[in-house]
Picture (cartoon, helix red, strand yellow):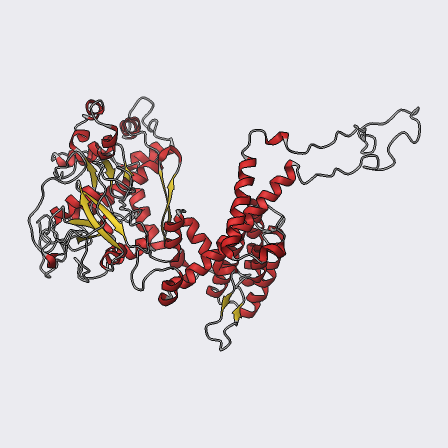
Length: 635
């Protein structure tokens, strides 16, 4: 058996190999259907009636003294759980996972710190200097470890709070800077806290310090409160589950705010600006998308104006129809007020004599029957209608063009790099649009089902019925797609990609075509696979959508690109994948596996001599500068 002294004598590869063997064996035994037969059982103990001790009932007077237990638990030996009992095994396996979380946090912190140190990064990670296939340390963890982007960012943020580091300004090479949160760092190093609890405590303390600074509180006073708060919260977190820890942190934050800001001052402009925004929170119930909107007073006034107009009970849709036909359907607004108050049932002239309210009340009931939407639904429809109208207005004239002239957006001029005017962009193949998918389904092979398109630029796959509804009141841009999803014929040859060419490339790629990239098509740039300077044409087959990061990474040599069957395949540099296995993007378009093309061929990772595959490095770009939207989307 390996003890701590024996483990410390092993180098890291040997230690990891031994740990893997042990963990694999633990996992195999835990998954064994006969596990319960190998676990120790608790010994049966005689039942003892303690009801009299707790006053549950009164014993009879003939009870013999001394027959009852002398004290609570005196006649029952304490239960001793063996090391092979299920409760102990559960606790020890959970403790192992926390030790692994501690190791993950430390490795993530070291990776993130050296990522921006190009010389050290090349020596430690083998990644060359300059632009690479990875945006930052968290993106490196996501791609190499195949973990979620959110998890990678959590590990990096956790390490920034609990990991000690070397002091770069000190003359002593062994000088170490203490962690930002030493008590939390100790708990992580000893594996006594769940990672979710660590994140909750760290976020609570960091937000408290930030808000206290915005409120202008005394830094020394705040430091003392946060130090004491860290000790209290870590003590609770080592004994409680993450849900309870979250509640304890909420209580502590209330007491902290009462001390730092006892008068409850109005939030500053900086606080308001930091908190406002439109936040997407994923899909909720009934597969509906959830958005959180935090608005200032002026922004709220604009939204409330739209919402009030969409839910105005006095707004009769037939009034607008009458005006369009040159007739008048004006109705006294006072009649509606009387109807709403419930007093419009008659007049002073006597019962049975109609006032202006009664015909209007009938119209209100009729409109309510025709429009069963709730107030919330009306507000949303009104907002979307207003935004749709605003998008339509931008189609009249383009505010600028590449050469500075003003012209119509509808012309097929050079694309500015960020796409066409803001518009709702959906892609659907013709037969699905025409409702012929059911007839095709029996004749389509399973490999080709990934090319039956019905999706929106940002949302992804949507119902064909929704797109058919949108097509009734939209301009259709015909682009012919082949059976494998490639664009068959579009456009003319020139230096910059035209809007029509960009639309065709967008219909094929969906978004950034780099493997695993999720940047939307309107944020991407059109890139020449075979560079224009090397004789490459400006065509759909020679174009590919790339976000700003991957565009620069391709020019830096991180990828080579080949188009096979109309699909862009990316051959990674050796530092990214020593085998240089061709890969493609499956986030926007489903299809064959990464190792083979649609027809079973494997793209070559060698330059064919004609410039295909970006064999020759080139520092030119197809746009005038950095795409700021792409950089923001990559953050």
